[in-house]
Image (tube, rainbow, N blue to C red; front, side, top):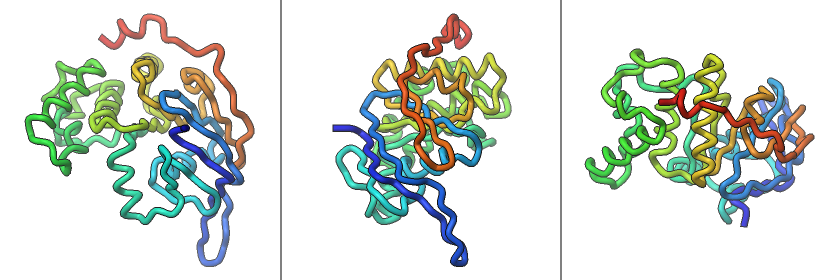
Length: 240
């Protein structure tokens, strides 16, 4: 059974009786453990698609099944519950709390769980260790480089052990070296079994994935396996 199945998905926005179609008749499946890039130019609808797949928005027509559950008819509260339990997000702008330590930023998704404080702390430290930031626990974001901030965001996305990690233009605010480090971390997480969905307009970034879904003008125009997957030689050394 596929983790994600989309059937004839349409999305349109209505504002004062003006209908703006965004996505048109999308059909695809994503299996557990895949690393998929959703690629397209600005305005293609790729971010709207990510918002639907990540339970941030609702489709207008069609069907969206997540891990065997039909998401299409869920209420806003049910979507919020799915979002908190099943997905983690990594955004271009990092979205870290500026006056909160690295460790406290990563703990945030666990605040409203039934975990003990000791367990929250242990999980958060493990997540930060997985992205090479054991030595930055008590730093605040202003003391970090851009690449380190994004690695904190990845640790925060990981801490709840989600079924899927969504990365929305994760290298957009980074220099090439830091961007390479971030993509190498996402590749390593995928090799460990995590499902990664990357949203990007950059061909080089998309080719770090194993499969590319190409979106143009709201339509799926390509679905291809990446044969020349970009492996960042030496990136492990850069991360250390």
